[in-house]
Length: 396
Image (cartoon, rainbow, N blue to C red; front, side):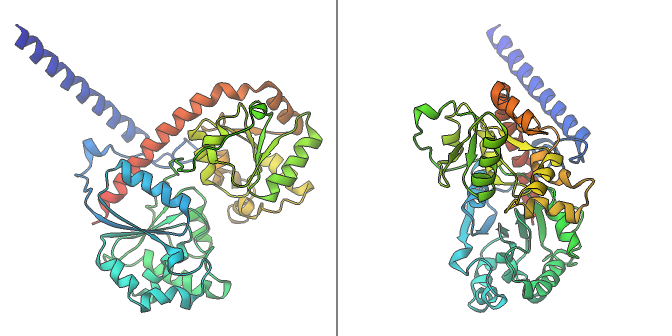
């Protein structure tokens, strides 16, 4: 009798688990292909355990970046997908940021490129994609499975005088008709349209995989008297530290606390019962996702009010955030800034006037959304892992 009960229980568990996987698979198939205008994600995927091929964790991977944040993000993925053979290269050990064409070519000449290619199955280059130029120069691509992880304008690390040649090499690498064709992924919606505005023929499949919001920066102590600060401003750029600080002071009844450049990351910010006031200077920044992961919400002006602020004032760092206006046009430009991503309005909270901002800071109603936004980040992380798994599976 006990044996029969155990057997029935075992079959019940198996059937329940199987039903759950079927429902999950149906959900992802039903939602595949959503874009930012119709849902939160640009792409959803088949669950690997149900529909995908076996995932190879032994693939030899090289990751190249000069930015600690992007490297930390990739390490999070590698750790959670149990990848066993990942080598990390700091591109600043090879050349400076914004190097010359000859500077980038130096690691072709000294054999570094050939060595990396011959000992790895896939090469990922992130942050400044120019750091990957040596791997595609002159159409002589020695590496299979070169993947450009785009977190910034793809040409930001290239001198103006070298850009046309870089564009030619980059375009050719993405459109080869052999096994050496490179791939592109992006961490926001704007990067691929920007590439296309420069004449790059980007293939249709280019997944958008946003940051995991993980940080290794350790928290620092804060003044207990500041725990209930009306608002926080991160002193990373003058546009926030000076302009926004002054504007909030002038137009609301509140005074923000400005935290220093090295402020201890989101693990420090979460100690405050407060919110970050931010004037966007990029279409997407890694700390916006890091903040949400630790329950730190952000206040940003609506697209219209953002435009008004920077029309009435000198916004010193708004060039990149406003770049979609020049590329996409006035009507849809804000759809390409992650701060205005549909479905995230309770986490990246918009205000249309100084009066509305004042009311938000006074009521602190945003605090009720802290756990909701944390949970959304957990969902985002899971989706990101599945997208990475899908990408790694198709690299042969």
